[in-house]
Length: 110
Image 1: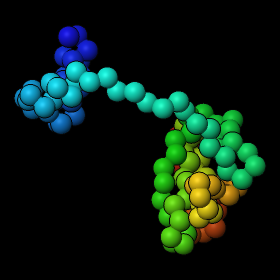
Image 2 (image 1 turned 180 degrees about the horizontal axis):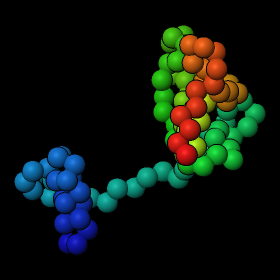
Image 3 (image 1 turned 180 degrees about the vertical axis):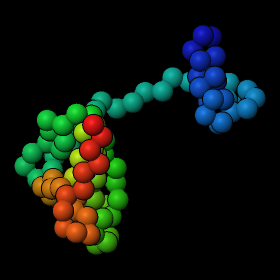
Image 4 (image 1 turned 90 degrees about the vertical axis):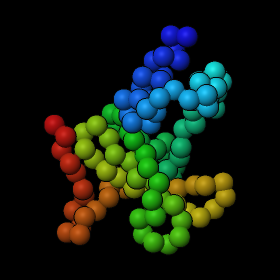
């Protein structure tokens, strides 16, 4: 019961649930199971290796119709691993994401 209340409070704080509905209550009764984490390869290396809190997002950076993988980290660095278009989904080598000035994007969070 305590977990249901915490989850409902979180949903309410995020503006996702104003009042508990029957559907919300039933959804909270179900146990959610996630698959085991999987390390993603970028070329021959693991993606985001030796980076603090790498955070990936998919986007077609070069407009070739294949999803690419953008990786930002705690220090503000952003890299990209271009999608190869093969199945299963695979990516090329992780490289710095360049701005219009051809310099690596770096948001210098510190």
